[in-house]
Image 1 (cartoon, rainbow, N blue to C red):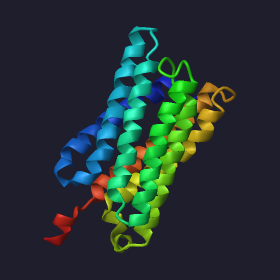
Image 2: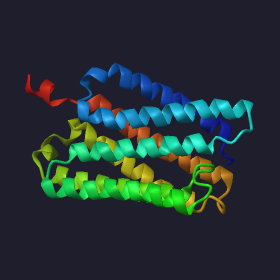
Image 3: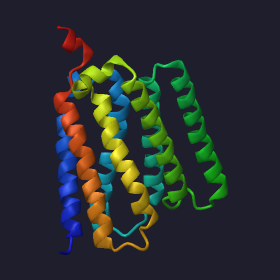
Image 4: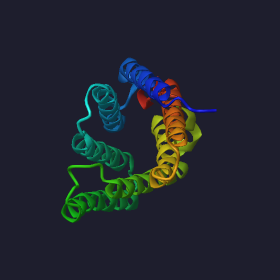
Length: 215
């Protein structure tokens, strides 16, 4: 069976629109801390949405803008986990991760002459690893707190599970992108996006902020 790449992209765009509508509907029930994540999520979604249609009408390279967008998104995600962490040692570790993020950007911008011209997979891999470590710190904190008893209604947990599955899955796909057939590459990417968005969807649906739960 041959995967219809274009159909997959269109479905992904529809899912992104539906997710943004859901976020808007659920906005009042989204705690302020989670806004860091959703700011990054919406920025990335709008970026994907814009460039999907932009590439339909032009062949101009857009990697430069996409690169900058990715950096902003990852900075928001890493700040999100810094805000979520309250254990002193974990917050310090997250500060180290944030510092490494900045060093990574500065270092790669000096080492790679084409850093702002093309999508840098080297910096992308490192940022993904930093984000994965951040998620692991958060999950460690969560499973060692009272939040474990209300995990179903704890939105950051579902956000983290979705992100962990997506980014762990995306590393080998990107690494072997030149050797894997396009059909397989885009199909797996589609599945990862679908799983990630599906988990966030249920997280938003089940989400019960502390103020609501105390009533």
